[in-house]
Length: 316
Image 1 (cartoon, rainbow, N blue to C red):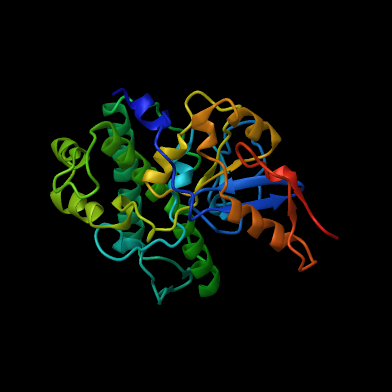
Image 2: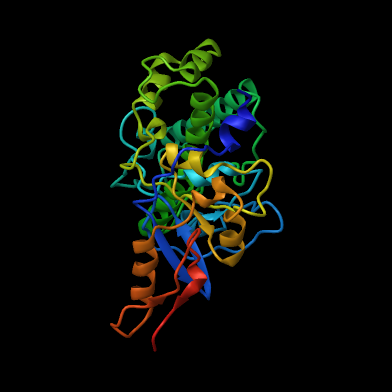
């Protein structure tokens, strides 16, 4: 099966929406079939959101954004990264920043060198793997996460920038997770494959066995509910032709949200595949109970087809 179809094609079988939640945000309904996390609807970017780790905050990328064809990996960014062990030991917590005479505080140059080498290795691995799987190339919204080079008068300023750079580094971890997920899908492998194709391919490209084994045992290559990732907003009706499918995102435990209003409800009445993505009745009731101050349950108009969030009538 071509990679494009394996990532974008929806299935015919029922979708498990039991762990989902309906949100009412600024008058519009959104639904996630696999996440109950609190979210806000993101802005729509007219162009790729290129950023500089020295000047820009990472906060906007710790929240789900609308799907972007040039940077689909943003959905895979881990929210609680683990930096212990190979090859992420250079990013682990550093409790002491030595003070250099007449220069202030700075990170050990060997740590900076190790961090830069890790970034380069990840970038090369991602680009090689995506090209090998004939996936569209990505745009790196930040070329580096090294925002703590140089010297600082105060240790706390250096520590702040060091921690901020660790936040930016999760971008690189998300990129590699995305590339691995693409490879697993293209090769139709199980998550527990002892020797996945991506491992053997990168090994033949002179990546060290120790480095690859560390990646394989890290959170980067784990795709289950224990790894909280940023997720993504998508459109069901006016969808981009290369957009991830809901099924693929759920398979890899990537949180996904989409509008579910009158447009989606009406479209689902003649499209059985779209109807699979409708919220469950009790999820609509949870949403209505949450947003009204009156304890009286909401009145719900009888439905014969897919549920329409906009049919809820709230008592004031």
